Length: 103
Image (cartoon, rainbow, N blue to C red; front, top):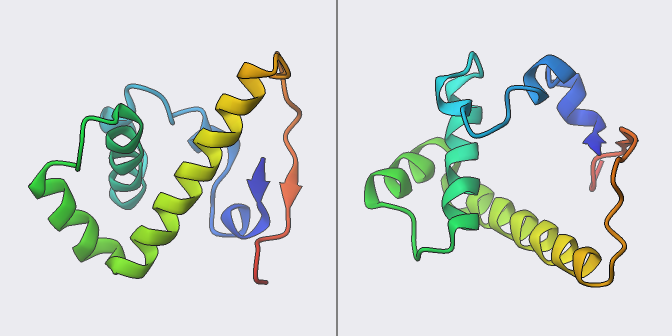
């Protein structure tokens, strides 16, 4: 799934292909790497992110955007677990472009 605004702002399939366990060494923009580091820390569920990461996230995104990101991650994680539990997880998904919420 891709939000239209993300594609308008330059998210293409070449960048998406770099979003994996090696993203810290990828050619992705630093802002995106920071967001991915937040997602990694969130899904690791080892407690709050390290203080240095928290400070970098607040400086780059601000509190409101971080809350929005955390809610998005929590929703994704919950729905993914539900699909897996129900045996409904598709083996492959087509790429779908959606209107960005609120636009």
